[in-house]
Length: 208
Image (cartoon, rainbow, N blue to C red; front, top):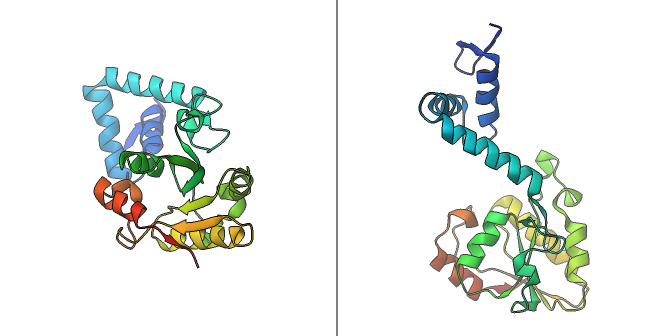
């Protein structure tokens, strides 16, 4: 059987090596972890592996970006954007769908969202066009939005993204606020407890 070198240096069948390489695309998964996952699925849980493959196939086929807020959905407009109960004068800008989920779990925010799907990172070649800034500007100009809440992460890239967006809206008559630093510097919303995030949202401040 033809073989290919696995991350650990041993020779594995081509399909197994491909599986190990594919698992390395997951965040925080290195060569050793990917190899352990692949061996576990093949040795101990082939049914689980089949379900995982099918679920991934369906998600890729059916999931799209919401035409309004840009999050993942199977509909043209996600349920949050379509809800008549949301405050359409508030638009909260987050980096990812997981950040949006964390904001929802605080149960303190009833406005709408825009998901950038990234953050500015010049060193990685990620500029405004790569994180849907043009769509954000268009979305905020719908005549209903009165306040844009910047809830990007408190990382260097997240702060740079927040500053860039605040500059864009500075002369457009739209109030721009930033969630308060109840979050640790360098922290990411996905890993913050709901109470801390809720307090940060309540104590948001105007961007000078």
